[in-house]
Length: 261
Ligand code: T3D
Image 1 (cartoon, protein in one colour):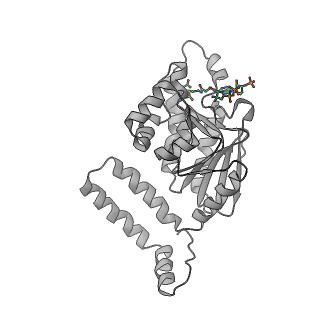
Image 2 (tube, helix red, strand yellow; image 1 turned 120 degrees about the vertical axis):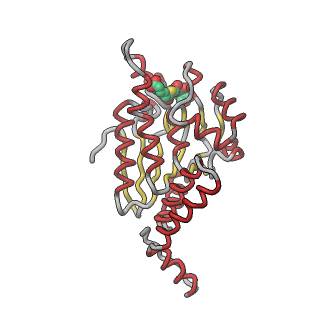
Image 3 (tube, helix red, strand yellow; image 1 turned 90 degrees about the horizontal axis):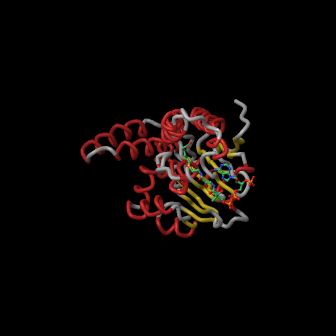
């Protein structure tokens, strides 16, 4: 599929999706929401893709909803419908892809841009990145799943404070709070991101995908159900070539060569 608002690159098992509207700091218009959703779906189905990276072109990750588009809306425009058909689909698509997604937050991530970063499984921030719950700055409540993702990551007290103040969180603070996994220098940022992504893409990615599924399911379960679900997904993982290879490699004292199946 060809896209106009994003760039998609597939190399060495890694699909990189680059938000590409740098003139507006990669603000999401309807087309970019739809194209990003489609790109995640495609990367999920693409057999050769075993890890997905999302990043932004230029100095920002994403400034969230395109506010110029907002200013053109008519009186009867329904934000609820816009969310249901746009951001909600994008976020659920990201969460349903059973492959690790890394958000490479190269600069500011605001509003829905912050939401997309939080819907990834792993986050690496450039030392220049900032995170802004920009919704309250324009009189909105948080969306793009940030009422769900953010308190789970950093706790209610911090999540509520940054959601109502709209104060930026630096990369260093985000690391201390456990909101990002790593912070990397701006100069070698994409090099470091891609080295990490390639390492994951060479791993037992079927198991990584099942781990994602089981952890999201466990959020809504009690202990007994979570244990039962672990047993179900472990049945799948244990029938994989990767499990056979992992055990053989251990016994033969060599590195394992996983294929993600
Ligand atoms: O309504 C719904 O659809 C509901 C869904 C809501 C989801 C949301 O995301 S709500 C939150 C929307 N986002 C924002 O409120 C953030 C708006 N942007 C900013 O606050 C600032 O731009 C930043 C803090 C992100 C960065 O500041 P700074 O000083 O580094 O850059 P800047 O000068 O403000 O922006 C640079 C350019 O990008 C500028 O354009 P120009 O003047 O050079 O032609 C600016 O207008 C443009 N830009 C930045 N953000 C957006 C944008 N254009 C459209 N939409 C934007 N969100």
